Image (cartoon, rainbow, N blue to C red):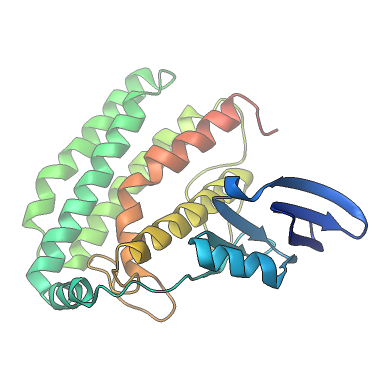
Length: 252
C-alpha cells in the first residue's frame, strides 16, 4: 500500500482500501496474505484484529522505504529452541563456523548469478575466477572481522559484474546505502528491506529470536539472525529481480 493518507478497513468479509470517499482497492479477506504499509497508511482496529488472529504479517515502511517494524502476532511458546539458540550464539567457534558457511553460500550464489549474465562474456569469466579464489580462504578465517573482509572484497567484485550487466546507464558505480545514491541502489535497498521483513517473520514463526544472530553481531534494534539468514539470498532473489526489471525497462 503506497497511497498516502489511505485507510484499510474490513467490510463484509472484504479488505477495502479508501482515500477520502474514493475506493482504491478491494479483495476478499481470505486472499489476504501480507500487508506492506508504505508511509502514511492507516489500518483500522478491525483489520489489525483480523491480521493478529490469522497470523497475517503487516510490515511498516517509511515513505523512502526504510523498514520500521511489523505487527507481531502472539509469539511462539517454544522456549527450548530459543535456549539452544542463545547457547550457540555465545560459542565463538559455532558463530565463526556458521558465519563462514553463510559467506560461502553467498559467494557461490554470486558466482552463479554472474555466470547467468550473457552480456559479461570474458569479463564475467575473469570475475568468476576472482570470486572462486575467495572460497578456499573462508574455512581458515580466524575471526568474524576477517570473514567480513573476505565478504567485502567478494561483494566489490560481484557488484562490478552487476554494473557491467546493466544494459542502460543508471549512474550505478558501486553498492551504496544510507542513503542510496542512484536508482539502482534505491531498488536494491528496497528489495533487501522487503526480504529482511520476510525472513524476520519466518524466524518468529519457528520460535527463534530474530535479534540474536551468529554472523552479524548484536546491536540495538538490528534483527541479526534475520540478516544472517537473508545474506545468501540477496543476489538470488533481489539482485536478479532488479537487474531484470531494469534491463527489460519495466521500470524506466
